[in-house]
Image (tube, rainbow, N blue to C red; front, top):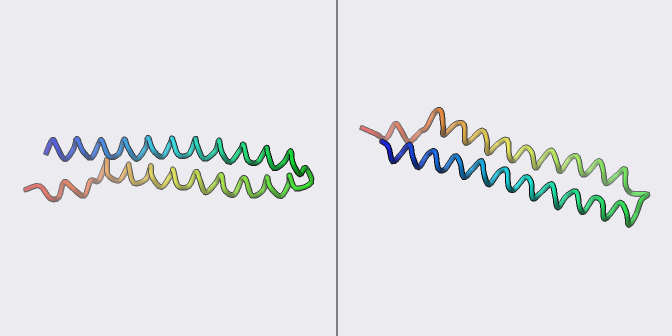
Length: 84
């Protein structure tokens, strides 16, 4: 029982950590490319900014899905039903 709870907690922490790190890296790369392309072609800046916010929302959505899975495994772990 303790090992199941321990590994579940460790897995949830890994999901949250990698989700946060991936979001931070994704926003950094995305913001840098937006600034580069806006500086290179300023007339395309409004169109690029719209696409930036769409992709930023998708990046955040992936993190929120990971948080949802983490909360599911934390509060309603399907592995506890395997115990006798």
